[in-house]
Image (cartoon, rainbow, N blue to C red; front, side, top):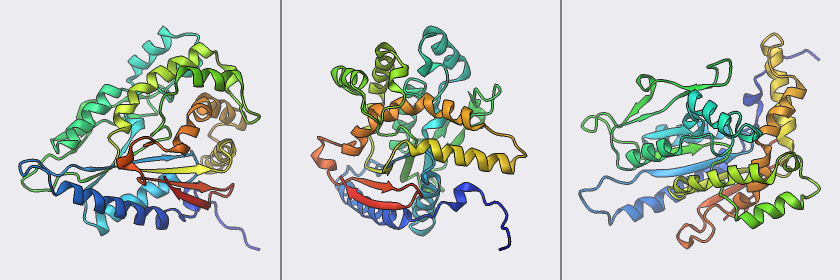
Amino acid sequence: MASTPDIPLQTRVVDDKSPICIPFILSQLEAHKKRQIDRPSNEPPRPFIIGLNGVQGAGKTTLVRALAETLQERQGLPTLVVSIDDFYLTHADQLALASAHPDNALVQYRGEPGTHDIPLLLSTFTSLLASEPTHIPRYDKAAFSGLGDRLPPSLWTPVNQNPSTEPPISVIILEGWLIGFRALPPQTLREKWSTPSPSTRTLHKHTLSNLNFINEQLASYDAITNMLDAFIHIDAEDISWVYDWRVEQEAQLRRENGGMGMSDEQVVKFVDAYYPAYELYYDGVREGVFKGDEEKRGCQLRLVVGRDRSVQWKEVI
C-alpha cells in the first residue's frame, strides 16, 4: 500500500463534536436572546459568553474553530474567541511569583492557577460585557526562549472600536484547559492529597502547602466563571490519556520539524507540571461548573471521548 504524507495531528482528529455542540449552543443562545428582551432600552444587549474546557489533545481547537465559524459566518453573530493563555502574567511578574515561592514547583512556570493576570481578565470582560471599545491582550509563548511574555498593548487585538459602523461583539468563546475549575474547600483538598486514588499520578510530588497556594489563587477565577452563560466540557474516559496524546503530538511535530520538539521524557515532565490541577479539580467540572445555580441548570454540555478522541457519550448538566 502506498505511503501517505504526514498529516498534522490536529487535522486528523475527526470533528464529531461540532454536530453535538452547535445545536446545544444555538438553543442556549436563543434562550439568552429572550432574556434580553426586558433589558432597559438604553442598555446594549449583553454578549453571550461560552466557556470551553477541553482535555489537551482531545480536539478542543478544532471545535472552537468550527463553533466560531458557525456563529460568525452562518448565524451572522460577531464572535470573539478569547484564550485564557493570553492572560498569563508578564515575564517579569512570573519571575517575581516564582522567586517569591522558590519551593513551589507549581508556579515556577506559567500554567497553573495563580499564573494568570485575573484583574486584567476581569477588566477586559467587564469592558466587553458593556460593549465598550476593548483591546484583547496577546501573549507570545516563544519569548524569552519559551518562557513567554505578554506582547505590548500596541499589538493587542482591538474590538468594538466603531459602534457606528459595525455591530459590537455578541458572542464570546472563552477557552482554556482550566476554564471552569473551582477552588476546593481546604478539607476536601487535604483529603484528596492524603488519600490518593489508584489513578493519582502527581499529587504526592507536592506538599499540601504548595497545593493550597494554587487552590487559594484559583478562588479569584470564580468571578469569570460566574459570567459564563453556557459551558462545554470535552472530557475523557481516562484523563491520563493526556500524556499519550501529548507524546503523539510531539512525535508528529518532530517528524514535521526535522527532529525538533520535546522528547517523550520531556513531555511527561511537561504534563506533570499541570496534571495536579486535573487531579484536584476535574471532578468538580464533571459535576457541573454551575452547580447550585438553578437558573443555569441545563447550561453545561459534557462530551466524553475515548482513546481515539471520538465521542463515546454526552450529558447535559
